[in-house]
Length: 93
Image (cartoon, rainbow, N blue to C red; front, side, top):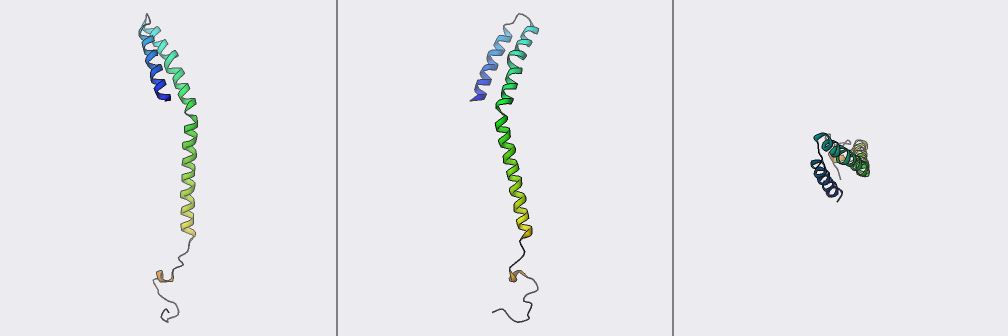
């Protein structure tokens, strides 16, 4: 919804710039009525989205680190996985 409003505002500003009497006045209108205020507004309103993305990335990295530590800390508890076989020399029961 925000982007639709931004596009509509830029359309209005472009039309305002075209109706100015000189190129310099049109460029100033475009920059100071359209480009500059809209970039500041979109930056400020996009801040929560950037914060969420950073938080999500940090959570994913933490989960990956914890999963890696869990895999490294888990010893092989399965005796059947031991390539040397049973240690006692007697068959398994």
